[in-house]
Length: 77
Image (cartoon, rainbow, N blue to C red; front, top):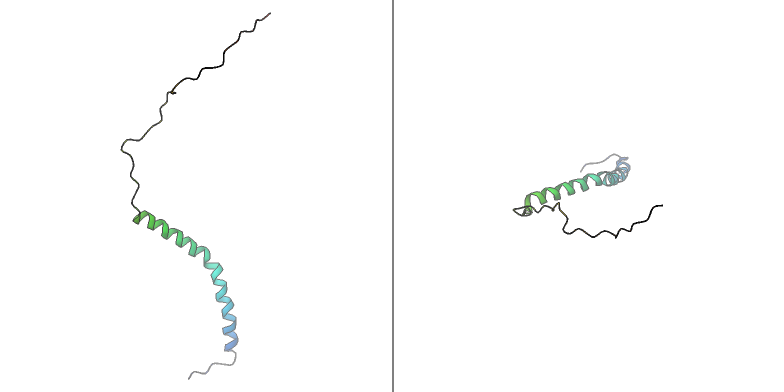
């Protein structure tokens, strides 16, 4: 049987809070790894969306010209 020095129990009690501080410090890296893993999975597992053969371009001419307001002539004196 291995005998431990008298002060070793105190060291173990101090180590628990130290390991507990690692969880908040590592959380951003775990989340970043999760996001990157999901992105990789999406790129390699999900099939790409099919694109139409001919792209639809908006026409540059208006469909119908809207009639403007009636112009009234004002006599100038």
